[in-house]
Each structure stands twice: as C-alpha cells, then as structure tokens.
Image (cartoon, rainbow, N blue to C red; front, side, top):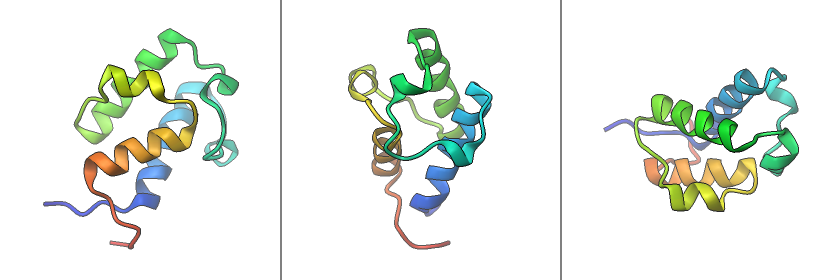
Length: 88
C-alpha cells in the first residue's frame, strides 16, 4: 500500500487547479473559495474527473456539493487516501 503525504496531495490538487484555470499554482491558497476561482458547474465536473484520474477514486457527488474551499478538497482526498503529515 502506498503512503500518501498530505503536502504532496495538496501540491497535486493545486497543480490540477492551476492547469484547469490557467493560473500559477503558487497563487492558489488553501482557504481560497472555489467560487472565487471562477469554477462553474461545468468546471466542477472537469475538476472531479481530473481528481479521479489523479487519485484513482471518485469524490461522491454529495461531498462535492459541500466543497467550498481548496482546503475542503484537500481534506476529502487526504482522508480518503489515509494521508499522513510525514514525508515519504
């Protein structure tokens, strides 16, 4: 079983968002609201697919509708993957 590092997961999520939005990943803060990034419902679907491709699991629609910030995405993914705060 692969051990996942929370910081690595955060960086991957920010990279996915940066690619999708055409912005610098360094400018995407954990507390940034999804709506402030300009992600509409179509963008949310694209994001869900990109996360599924990267992390190999689907985020439940119920969970996705509750996502308000980047940190919410990070927490869902790290919880699902059982990530640690330690480096690999």
